[in-house]
Image (cartoon, rainbow, N blue to C red; front, side, top):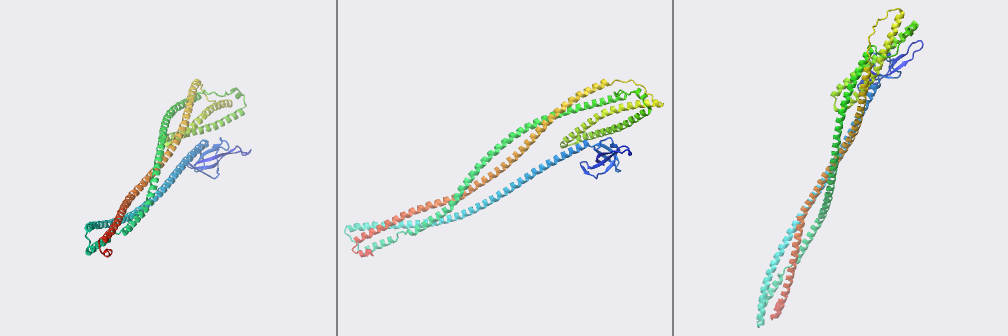
Length: 585
C-alpha cells in the first residue's frame, strides 16, 4: 500500500553510534484519487538515510509493514494537486451548467404562468363576448317585436287611409249632388222637407266617418320611445366597439414595432454569427499550424533524444575504455603514507562508493519507473477522447520533463561513480602491493580519444535544443493566442446564445401579440357584424315611423279640411231649406 511519509532523522549519542532514520506516515492512498489521513505511525527505514530530514516521500509498504519502495513526493504531489485543480474546475463547470439549467427552468415556469394568465384572461373575454352576443340577440328579438308592432300600426293606418279615401269619394259625390241642388236652387227650386232630412243624415254620417288620429299618435309615440330605448341600449356597445378598434390599432402598431425590433436583432445576430464563423475558421487554421509545429517539435525531440542516447553510449564507451577525465591519484604519496591510514582511506572510499552506487541504482530504478509511466500515458493518449486528450498531453509533457531532468542528473552521477571506482581501484592496488598481496594484472589498453566525437554530438545537441526551445516558444505563444481566441469565441458563442434566446423570446412575444391583435380584430368584426344589422333595422324602423308620422299629419290635415267642408255644407243647406231646424238636428 502507498503512503505519504515524512523523513525523520534521530541523532545518535556518543554510545549509541550513528544516526537513525525513520518515516512518519501521514496519509494513505485508498484509490487513485482518494487519500485519507492515518494515525501518526513511525517505521524504521534506513533506505531513506540519504534523504534530508523533513523531506516528504512516497513509500510503498507490504502487509508486514516493510519498505518496498521509496521515492520523493514532490512531483507526485504536484500531479495530485494538478488533478485536484482539474477536478475543481470540472465541478465548477458542472455547477455553472446546473445554474444555467435552473435559470432556464425558472424562466420556462414564469413563461408558462404568464401563458396561463393570458389564457384565463382570453377565456374571460370570450365569456364576456358570448354574454354580449346573447344580450344583442335579446335586443334583436325586441327590435323584431317592435317591427311587428310597427307593421301592425302601419296596416291599421293604411286601413284608415283607405276608409278615409272612401269617405272622401262619398263626400265628393254628395258635394256634386249638393252643387246640383244649389244650381236648381238658383233656378228657383227649394229643397223640400224629405230632401233636407236626407241631406242632413248624409252630413251626419260623413262627419262620423272622420278618421280618429289620437290613438294612432299614441301608438306611434310608444314606437318612437321603444326605438330610442333600443338605440340607448346599442350606444354603449358602439362605444365599446370604438374602444376595441382603438385597442386593436394600438396593438397593431406595437406588433409592427416589435416586428421591426425582431428583424433588427436578427440582422445583428446574423452579422455576429458571420464574424464568429470567420474567427472560428481562423482558429482552425491556427490549430492546424500549431499541430504541424508540434509534430515538428516532436520529431526534433526524437532526434534530440537519439543524440542524447548516442551521447550516453559514447560517453559510456569512453568511460569503459578508461577515457574518463578526473582527479589524478598521487601514487608516490600513497606509497609513502602509513599503511593504517591508507587502509582507512580505502575503506572510506569503498563505503562511499557503495552508498553512491546504491543511490544511483535507486535513481536508475526511478528512471525506469518514469519510462514505464511515460509508456502508459502514451498508450492512454492513443485511446483517449477529445476531452481528456489535452490533460493527458500536459501530464505526458510533465513526465517527460521530469524524466529528462532525472536523466540529466544521473549523467553526472554515473560519470562521478566511474571516476570514484577508478580512484578506488588505484588505491586498492597500492594497498595490495604494500601488503605484499598479488595485484590484479590489468593490461593497458589503447585508449581512443572520444572527446571530439562527444564535442560534436554535444554541439549538435545544443543547436537542436536551441531550435527546439525556439520552436516551443513559438508553440507556446501560438497556444496562448489560441487560448485567447478560444476564450473570445466562447464568450461570443455565449453572447450569441443569449441573443438567440432573446430573439426567441421576442418572437414568442410577437406571436402572442399577433394572436392578441387577431383576437381583438375578430372581436371588433364580430361586434360590428352583430351591431350593424340591428342598427340598420332600427334606422329603417325610424324612417318608416317618420313616414307614418308624416302620413298621419296629412290625414289630420285632410280630416280638418273634411270637417270644415261639412260645416260649410251644413250652412249651405240651412240657407237652402225652409226648415232650418231639420238641418240643425
